Image (cartoon, rainbow, N blue to C red; front, side):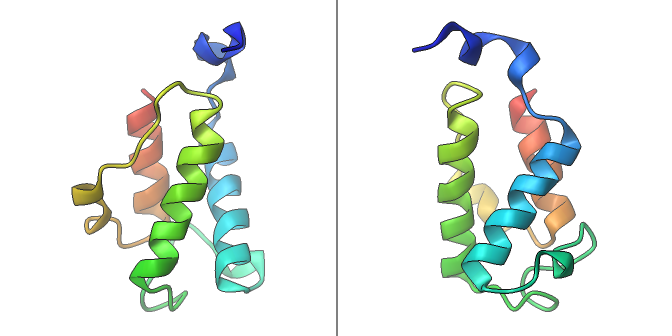
Length: 96
């Protein structure tokens, strides 16, 4: 594994995490990225179902796993993520 994946300097900023979530959700839901704001709720505002959220989690684990060894979203935590802000906060907390 490349050494840079083990350094704190490669961890994404909050803005980068938001950008990743925005890009992936827009792709999954086939919507304009501009609709994916921090205040947007998954169910009501973005009409994202549980399958879309699972796809988002898989995309995040793949992308962030390359930057932070072993990044994972716990299945039991998924139900607590109601908005884009919740997801960004969760990712930032998990990355340390």
